[in-house]
Image 1 (spheres, one colour):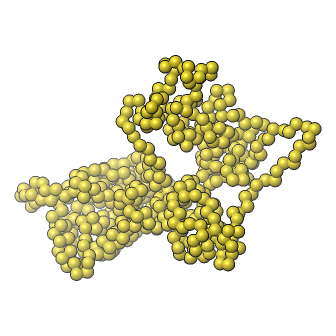
Image 2 (cartoon, one colour):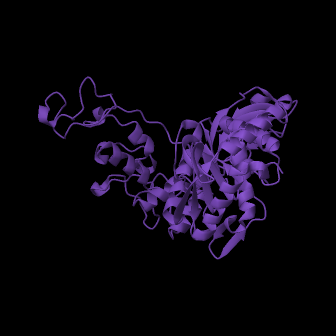
Image 3 (cartoon, one colour):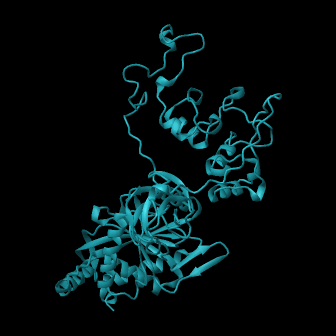
Amino acid sequence: MPIEIRMPALSPTMEEGTLAKWLVKVGDPIRSGDIMAEIETDKATMEFEAVDEGTLAQVLVEEGSENVTVGTVIAMLAEEGEDAKAVSAPPADVPAPAPEPSPSAPAPAPTPTPTTGAGAKATPVARRIASANNMDLGSIIGTGPSGKVTKADVEAALGGGGGASVTGANTLPARQEDRIIASPLAKRMAADKGIALDDVTGTGPGGRIIERDIEGFKPTQVPAQAGTSPETARPDEAPALAGPHSDVTTPDFGAPYEEAKVSNVRKVIARRLTESKQTVPHYYLTMDIRLDPLLALRKDLNEALEPDGIKLSVNDLLIKALARALIRVPACNVSFHGDVMRHYTRADVSVAVAAPSGLITPVITEAETKSLAVISSEMKVLAGKAREGKLKPHEYQGGTASLSNLGMFGIKQFDAVINPPQGMILAVGAGQQAPYVIDGELSVATVMHASGSFDHRAIDGADGAQLMQALKDLIEAPMGLVV
């Protein structure tokens, strides 16, 4: 019997994802544990492992497909001994066709079948958007499989168009009564590109203008005015960019550009950091910290650990220092959750890593108790997996505070954005030679600027200052990091 391969939930919060790439093809034998596809979630690109065994008979969702709902059948597997060519896709839940009208009566105009309120078929994302906007799903016609209401249908209804309300017997065509129906995203894209929506032909449900229509729009698509052929149009009526170079994506007064599709990971980064700056009251505390004792300890430790193939980085020591400081000042090892505060009993440090898909923060758990050698080894593995997009959810979710280090780029000082729901993030720059007073005498030292960003809802200024002082003490007297 054929086996259905469904879109997996690769994280607890995943509702849909992008099937980024198929790593197998029809006819390939599949064994349990084989990597079948790469799936882009709202956090990272992750590998999808096969659980069942057989022969890949059909691919039902092509690679590059976006917004694939968890549970959707994406492929069919033929079991051993079964003819893969005979395997068919699962039957769609299609309503029975209406009976043929009698020849003597004119055929009635087809009317969409409305779905009803709570029982309406809809994707999880569509339900969430509808609920947030107090919309009745029963008033929206679904264009998805079996009449399911999709995210696009709800967005269309919010934008005043199609996805269309079933309160009337007939739906209006996209341009009826000079009213242009377009998705909110298409409207924003058109405004950004300076494209008039009435020049664009919609290919969405009911003629609605959608994202791909704007992306594929060329000025040469503008139709000639009624009664005027292209050959007889006056020069002042010609499209502004028509001519031999009409395919160049250069605006009238701007530099040439290329557009790249925004990944799910980048969308989540944009959303979360925007929410952080808009909803979290940040305050910042900056300190100069002398690095020379830490650098000397690192040198001695690396010489001792060289036979074991371990080489500590400054960042490894800073992870341990931040974790110990959080334990010393527990008022900063917290997060704000509306009516409650969470006070953490261990320090899990999220470390910012630049990956091809965007910033991600793998977590060193219980960093306050781990040796520097263990922290170094774990960090190398996690950073490598982050750059390859192979982190598992438990490796980047959670964390009680974050560390962001741009010192390797020569950055002297910066303020980082808090990663909610965490209460703070430490930003460190490069160590630089500078005048520094030691025991009342002026000398030259390697000085690092460290800046803490704190959530004022959860952490008072005095507590934040105590954390920064504890951090400074641990770095300038670093023997506390080796116990």
